[in-house]
Length: 488
Ligand SMILES: Cc1ncc(COP(=O)(O)O)c(C=O)c1O
Image (cartoon, rainbow, N blue to C red; front, side, top):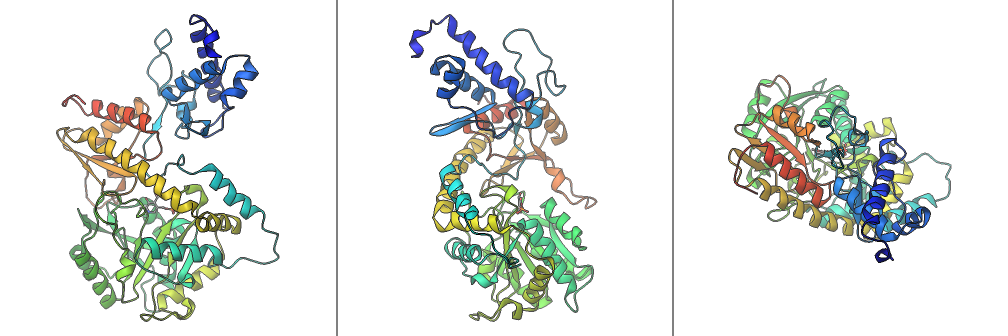
């Protein structure tokens, strides 16, 4: 009944509702991701028309406070960080100017590493948790290797999407990739004949949390350069000849963070070398669900006829990093054999022993909910939805910078982040300028191993979480901050 309000009255009422919601965000009564009342419910409560509340929500959506999606309850934007939720007096923001344009910048967090949670169908998500919560109490400790239902689902998923079919017995549930890396490092150091501490080759630049996981398990990360196509195997050989390595941690399907996939010849080369030298290959397959260009590449584990690869996967980039759930796949034993993993290759035996010593690290209820999501097909539908969403966002990133001189966009072949390599603008300055305009991005140099002497000038952007509109606005701001170029 919106038309019953006069046009003079309406903007005031719209601002009133918008101020009300914004105020609740500022004073902490509403936080990122909180559900808001439906337009009907709030209109009823405030004695206003539904159209007024809808207009206020739309205004807040434009400002980045609220997320509106068709068919889904309105929410406070999941991307709204604590900084954005502070009232407008925050020192991060530009000085307030009078009048209605004194709104604070909503902070758009484009630091990489998190998925879009908007794509999860709430019905499926709730059904999975209802199913897990309905399980009766049980008087037993969980299997340290993980719940059989989840291990079976992961094994099916790998067969469908990653080109190899490990039995469920080879799948071990971990508290994310981070725990898997520390578990493998610990297991390797315990093996007879292995170096102690374990020396683990890591990509440079590479995944910081991966390096920290090596160190936390008492291992020593040893940096190895990467090319535009993943780890440089010749450089790896040279490093090994100087300081004997026990393992190598690689992201062969999508080098993190620079992008690029290891070609098949380099993969065979790496595996044959590792088998000859007795080095374990740890494959971090962190975002392979999202390949945007070219055919999906089978996992390195799919080529492993030597039993040297430990394959790692995670639910952090596909669902929600707070689940703290991932998995490792033990190296294959003799080809075609299905021996019990704890009687398999020495590495498999050592990893199983380390897992048993630590006990289960992911609560059964989490594992059961994930198994349900996978067994009902909801997980696959979710991944397909994310893939479509990320492809569209990736296109926005590619188009935003394709003609900007001195800027090269990398890592767009897959995943949910991109790298802008910069020729002229110093990345440190750009990161600071963008922060002052409410956009958070990561400095590429932060991915470089400290003391390695490598210097990179660029920024890393995670493009998954914001809505398409918020992302495009943020990209326009980044483009402006990069200096004059052709008009967008
Ligand atoms: C390279 C890489 N590996 C793995 C992960 C996932 O780690 P975890 O499962 O510990 O959350 C990420 C997430 O950001 C990543 O960037």
